[in-house]
Amino acid sequence: MLDLKFVQKNLDAVSQGLKRRCKTEPDVAEFARLDEARIALIREAEGLKAERNQGSAEVAKLKRAGQDASGLMAALSQMGERIKELDAELAVIETSESDWLLKVPNIPHESTPEGCSEEENPVIRTWGKKPSLNFAPKEHWELGQALGGLDFERAGKITGSRFCVSFGWAAKLERALAAFMLDCAAENGYTEVLPPFIVNRQAMTGTGQLPKFAEDLFKIEGQEYYLIPTAEVPVTNLHAAEVLDEDELPVAYCALTPCFRSEAGSYGKDTKGLIRQHQFHKVELVRFARPETSMADLELLTGHAEMVLQRLGLHYRVIALCGGDLGFSSAKTYDIEVWLPGQGKYREISSCSNFLDFQARRANIRFKARGAKKSEYLHTLNGSGLAVGRTLVAVLENGQQADGSVVLPEALRPYMKGLAKIEMK
RNA sequence: GGAGAGGUGGCCGAGUCGGCCGAAGGCGCUCGCCUGCUAAGCGGGUAUGGGCCUUAAAAGCCCAUCGAGGGUUCGAAUCCCUCCCUCUCCGCCA
Image 1: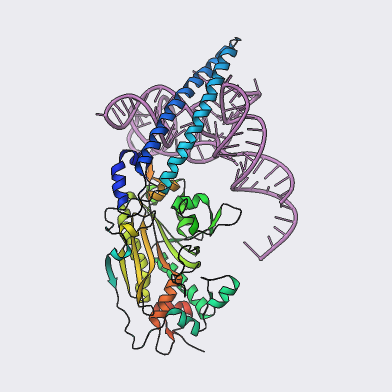
Image 2 (image 1 turned 135 degrees about the vertical axis):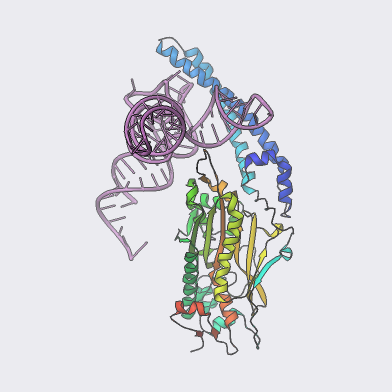
């Protein structure tokens, strides 16, 4: 969330900054009104509390001296009633104000491009080339089903739509990709973490999924527990309410987890195949950085995600999300889009973001600079490195041959016991 | 799931029948002195958030915080209730 003090003092700048998201703007006047009311109540209540505290000390003195204090006590009791009223009013205002703050998105970083829709996301760079196929490429689900690896029907039977069962080579390939990605991350200095896949409300609030996006999440019935939509949630919250040493930074974690998304509101989009599932695996990269270096860290992080695609020899491009396409918590985001010959499109396979102190403030993650007296919020970043299911899609579509078989990237073969090609038995 | 113990400042740890307890003591850290260096010693400082004051900051004053949230009371770390977490034993289980 944004800094209350900052919003207080920079209403116009906040309003201007948020305009760049092209969404309905939060009502800053409403914030100002709440904030004023809150401070007025605090003053009144604290004044009375000071009086009461003094009075109570007086009571103690009188009683020690063996004198009667009943008159004073009665007066103080009455004061207590008034204080209770004020505190109740204050609680209401504070709830509204923090709710306002929790529902306001991050302000786009100055380097985030202007624009309101995904069409306006500039391409930053491309890597590799589209494979030249001298036949009509198939989409991954055709390939996967024909080769006996992907089974959407049976998944529908045991669960429902937007689920898939992988058999044999497909299950192994999923596992191989994940292991390969984790090894890449380790090489780049990330510490592997295996977090819980179920988190509480606080964690979801810390990274920004709650309170605003509850409908995107799977919630455990009868409990304040949620299935994680990304490892970002448990891993970023690992250091919630902690103060890290400056020397520890940057902290870099990677985690392979399933991700669960309700995909509410995406009816009709990507209904076929693995692109949009309720459950998928993702290797997530998470970094905790010093504020001064976080933008450089974002470049680094994006590079780490790209490395996976490069080693797999998959053609991709990197785009910068414009203000209107930016996620709620992010100040700056690069998406990596891999080329899918079957679809004839670039599709998002990674999203790398710098949240600045937006999440750190929500989750209360701080660091103490050496010699500094006070701790300050650090910056959090994360990026997919990569979405495993979508990478499997890319491997299938890019490696496909005219006969329907799929040649695997060299880098993956050691993880597949040397297997170079998937073909019909 | 059953029985019990416990959660106090960066850490350890005290807190008596509720009243100068925001919290003794120790460790750590830090500043000064001292000392060939180091160590030891001596003295001081050492939580966080908020309000007031201030051009701003500091200082100062005030409020809140002893797992979280309620309650009792003039007054709660201390009493009561609810919840969370940790530990031990038993049960169960991969």
